Amino acid sequence: MALVTGSKYGLMVYNGVADESPAPSINQSFTISKSIGGFNLVITMDPQRCICPVLMTWNGITFATTASPGDHGTGICAADNLLLDPSDASSWNAFSPTGPGCQADGTSSRLGTSCSLARYVDADGQGFRHIQNPAYWLSPGEVLVPGHPARNPGLVSRMRRDIYMRIGAWSGATWATDQIISWHATMVMPVDAQMQRHKSLKMCPLTVYSSTTVFDQQEYVDASTGTASAYPGYPANSATQCVMTSHSDGSKAICAYVPRTELGPQGYYQGYTASGIWDSFVICQTDYPSGVPAGTYTQHGYIAWGTRAQTIAALQTIYTNVG
Image (cartoon, rainbow, N blue to C red):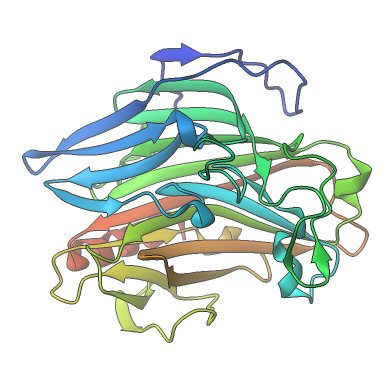
């Protein structure tokens, strides 16, 4: 993976541990683009969402879009959940560092600005990188599900998330196609007794939000064969079939994908619809009976996009080359 070298903002202090340096002020939008089929694929990052990608467009089609404030308010993002009890799925949001910000972001009380802290940005041509301290989804003590108050001590986590995104496969890869966007997510968990007491880590390294005005269905796709089948609807899950958001006329589709070798023993693909948004995402869950250890956690993700046929072909290409 080659790093991009363009307009850099902030201090690059990153050696596998989360530092406590002050966050810089980054108040501008960034874009990356590539000409594909005579039209520019453009991905836009917004400072109000902590420099997370908010829009992905090509030839007048919006493939990823902003969501409602309650659904992160971004087009492409990463989030994590730490659970005290791996068997209790209803406690997911009780300790959840979320890239674009917290649940309250986007309301008048927060003036539409993310509570996550951007540390570093590097955007140039087809590649984009940013490092941040993600905010927790809930404020300390806030209750989203009865009996599960948020357990985070503050609003902004000490965790460090490092995201690198590139249109196409990683630099130097010979199997690249125009219908692939590469995504590399690294999360650094510091030594913190509050974090280490949790018994399960649900990494959601890649989520794609799309508009129901553009797409009208979700499907299961087996990336090894290209076979598509009906998606039964959230919260059904699958450890073998990814969830593709598409249009029934076959003109467009998009799908988040993580190599199966990185899913973890409880990892799966999932999608749902809410507030006018189609959602395709991947959860990589690992349980730790003695507590989630401090350290660095890395996941590789991909976005397949294009017509429905192109998206399925791109998924097969990814599977053939990375599993």
